[in-house]
Length: 396
Image (cartoon, rainbow, N blue to C red; front, top):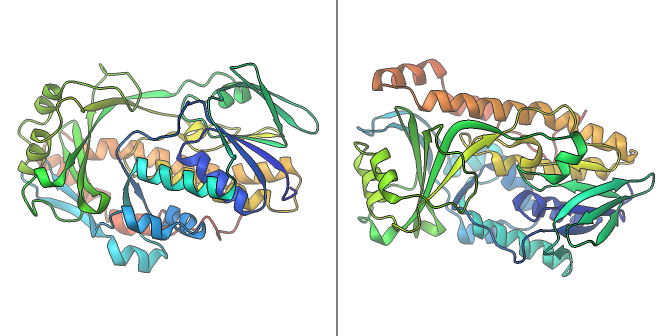
């Protein structure tokens, strides 16, 4: 595909912005269309392993990531009530030495802001707001995007990065409702100065227990403590980052859990407890047509139980840029993108779903036995997950 080709990215989330930055750096003319009236990101903590941070570093963003991120020392699985460590593996300097880039924990809003600055720095008018894409028409030479305000835009390629409720996906392959997993997640952020000094080390903790688990780690240089608490629940089906729920329900859910969880929950802002239903998407057989392609949550939404949702979107951005920068005709390049991304993303989605069972066994003894049977999680992830290099991995 010619380097000056026009590419329209629908969605200015993390994946869409990463794709725009990679494509612009490669010489493509990119416009990002975002339905929101203002740019911003909600949510709380996010984790990025080397298979994503290597891409962001290639965009010149490491100093900005260092300024707002935390590099955890390890990844520790602990029992919900006694804090007994069941398993774990090193992160920190070890992760960077083995896989060539750091492991970060960041506030989503901070990462989003970094990517917005990156894209806007490459082209000040690259991002258009209040542009809700409601459909498209493909022609032999270009694709025309239709927006809810009646306007249109044309491009050589449309990239659907519009999330789990993707309008681009729906037109491309037909209605594909995301699948409710029977689980939901609580999300709170607590200022660290409201907690006892040194009450938690700079590590990523996963507290596993009957029918639920919780994840805790620091954000913003240790100024904030992030808690995401995932529970088995068929009754909560509302999906969205901004849906509030009663603090009393969160407190009741984790009654009897270890002191660290109790401290964080007790210090939460009672009016800022959020809960969202967790959905994923079964593997799709087609990610593209001749001039339209999908990426990120639009095509492989996953449970957050391997911390790879945003990472997969960044990987997509890098691999898509590589295939489009080749001399292949566009349909062949898009087919190669899908061929190389589909097996890996499917495995991550499936293993994330399997972790829901691993983390939620009904007794302490069952949890111990399950982690013993699972084997060395760190070694397993080193072999195929973190060692993946989207900028250099051979593409077939």
